Length: 249
Image 1 (cartoon, rainbow, N blue to C red):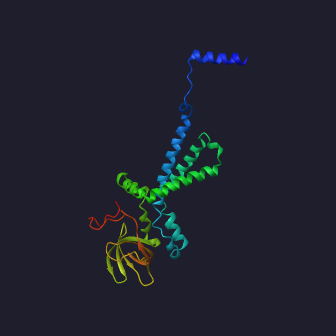
Image 2: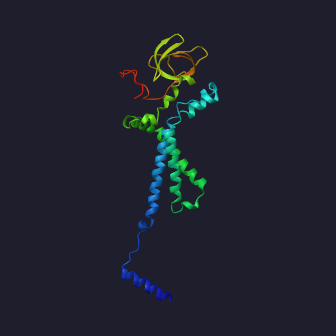
Image 3: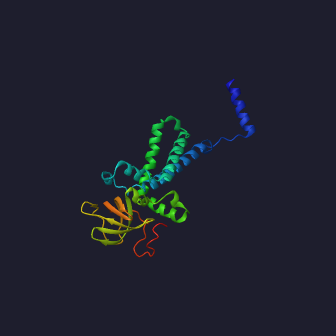
């Protein structure tokens, strides 16, 4: 009986000229899923690096000088929501793609999520270390119309005097008083005294770009409790660049 079945199979193969499928043909869907997964991980790393780029100018040292509400506004109110949303979708699709791989069903959900998140964040921090995200952000700003409406420059979080945050370029210096040109908000008088914490890296001189934490005490008058450098390249024109008022392009 077994021999008869074997002969029938062999005869059918010869008659219909059936050719065995190659390994690639049998596994092309699995290969495609892995390619999609790698692509999603790389895109997730890109989005995470752009989100990370938004964080470094927030010094946790200032937490001591802010109430919880103001500190929460500083972090959450200026969070890079666009990149966080894209990152979330990349991680979700990456997880689903891994599940569809040949052996993906064998692993626990927590392990899969952990591996994907670790890979995405590791590559994201690597891109941040290489300043790839900074160059990409600046390139998007130049080439994509209205880009800044969806992904504001990270330094813009500091331009809210009503909430106690002010950033700008020093254009004049007097005793315990600075005149600061701030994007969108005009020129401000920033007062400081012996109690004001001035970062040693800050030079209180013209052209220095600073961020101040304190409170608005009058029309275009700001009392600073902390004065620090504002590490946001491209937000302000460099010295000698010509247009001194067009801070945000």
